[in-house]
Image (cartoon, rainbow, N blue to C red; front, side, top):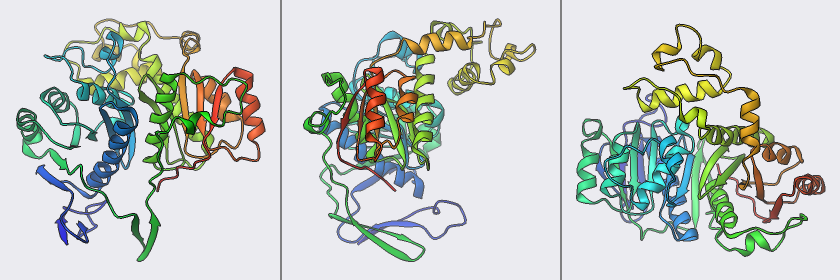
Length: 394
């Protein structure tokens, strides 16, 4: 049995705290820093996610975790000029490697939520990825290995306290897992369901629209694999090889769909030409730009653009982006995929999803109102697969 002592549990008053394994050695090595309780919960959940994404797609994968749910997850597809700009990687001194591209996408899905994240990489962390991590506010990273150059960069981050964890890729946990709550031990078989099989998404499509092209099939897999490691209830919007909006831990599924949809809308709106042209003052930090863009696009736009306020952000007062302009821009967006960790009980979820450009859906099915959900999909020409699989995670 091996035990690793931690600073404290979820909160500073929760001591002592540790992690242990009953037989053998812990399957990870701490190369730098001192991970906390929540850090390790994030790291080990995130590692499972990126390992599964890698196996399902054949592409390097990355995740950005916060409070035991992903803020973003992605595979390594090239970035166009617009995405490079909104992810703030267009000024890096060297090209992004595939694994760095995956992390840029994962981090960029929801930059507000990714602030102070724990990163996970399916492949060796190279120098390009380390330089990307170096400039972001992040608590740590888990990966199967690190190049010497990458490790030097990460060990210097946060005055040597940045958490760097090397994961043993050969590790396989026992088939039964345990959890203790209020002195009571819970036991269950691990969720080993394989979400990579194409047939899962094509064998039962009850909508009139039947065609799910290869890119959408990939994105539906990314959505469901992401949800497998997201606190329930949960919904995930994906596009172009990455999550663009995740709604986690809501008691109502429609609230998940709205929350994730709002995040997906923000991801699309950040690419609006008027947002890309915002005249930021030189030296404004990336986190402050993120916050300002969110305020500019949200209900607080009048406050950001008020006399005496805009000067702290911009060199000149930008023109507001009207609600009509936002609606027009979002109406152009199509090809978005939507996954749900359980069935949609009503068609209201599809009504909301359609507003965010959803064209393809994968959900468990099995609601007494499946007919209503199917009819709503047919109303908008959305192809929906019933997987028959629930993916609750707690």
